[in-house]
Length: 606
Image (cartoon, rainbow, N blue to C red; front, side):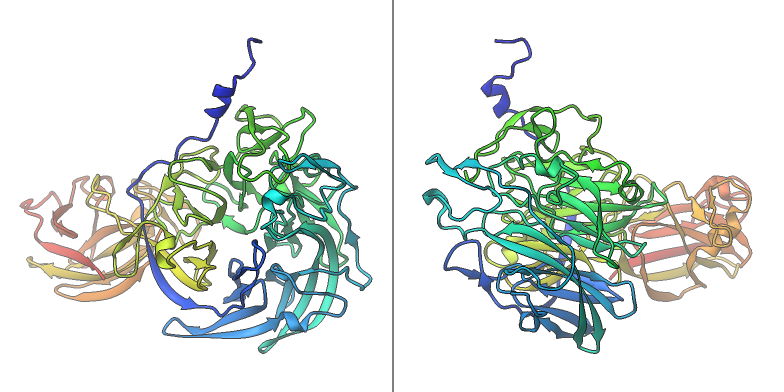
């Protein structure tokens, strides 16, 4: 055996690190139910829902039944109204919308009341637009029978071993622009078409989002069946399959922004705390080794002089990459065992983008196909990204910065709206849930369950960090704040908003960060006050998540004291935890009598 040869036993051990147990807890609150029409599913003779991730456009939530229609959520949560605005029966001339991905995705347009639709047609569009064709015929061996197939991109029949799946078909993903007029979409304008192979065992992608410059970022699948390594086309910049494309809606032209992706079904734009630029986040469904969560700086994608590479498809060294693993060729249409892992790739690896997170489909916690992610500073505190498995409904999270790579993945504990623990999202539907993640118009996180059409708001449960009890550090919440006084001064108390546990605040006049001890800290802190109360009063208010809330006192309405001794005029501590969710102040310079009962401010979580 060669010194660097990998044995079969060693290969069997090659897999992402196990998902870790955690105390992370997310509450799942029911919001509403969208209508849907079951359509052709993955299994012949079985109709099922096929719902896409909801999309926010112009402060409205749009719900996508890929089989049938687009709906808009109007009204409010106490009186939700769901209005249909498009149906497949309104297909533009020349298109045949008769498949489970007829309405693949939608995104906001460049003009007021403009919406882009990516429709999947069973027939080639007849309008005069660019049509981007699949790669040349790719012969291969399929199935355990060893049956030869003439073209993996145009499979005409399935082998007996998986004949229960819907046969793949050649289809066209056609981009249209529509005008929204009241409750209808009118004036369709065809832009471009992308030939693909879709059906039961194939990867047709579909993630789509409008970029700040007005162009459209669209994820194409590798157009191949399960069991294969993607072959060479995802690594060929002259082919459109297995790519992130930047499409110009004016003329239908595109640039390749990234290559080497397998099956991205959802894309989100994320504001990164670590960068001035937006991040592009997406999950890429794996074969049998690694499910990937990826984030990349949008500026890197926009610079198409360098095509970012996520590794899927056969590279010049003969291997595809799945997560941080080399993948062998595989045998197309072999279920759940191909393509095999072939070795561990270096991380980092020159020329390749490493996943922010990955987890194994053979992990003890389960895993079949990743769905998500969703990020939301309004909904989450310690969680940076939330995602799940389509099949198991088990929810996972990362807590590290989105710009890090190969970070730990944690299993998330779930509770329902009655605060009862649930094992997974399956418990909400009594079976496979097929979760689809999104953001509500207010920026909070949500999930839609395909099985029932129910959609929910997701909130990380309040958790107080007791390592410094004189500040509050937790997620979005509603509180009742109560004050009490036992001093001769007419004191005023409140909380101000900081961006970290060190008390750093943003000066609203300059936009600069001001740290504890800096000149001007008192003025900047008070400018970030979220509430001021006198003595023996109470108020109820909602506080945003993703921030730290610091109690402060204006002794006799003038002298500023905070939880940070170095920010106080005498350099002494003037705030102390005096009970659960209660803070007591000393209101005299020099520390007074140190009983911390001159002014007490408390809060109750509602």
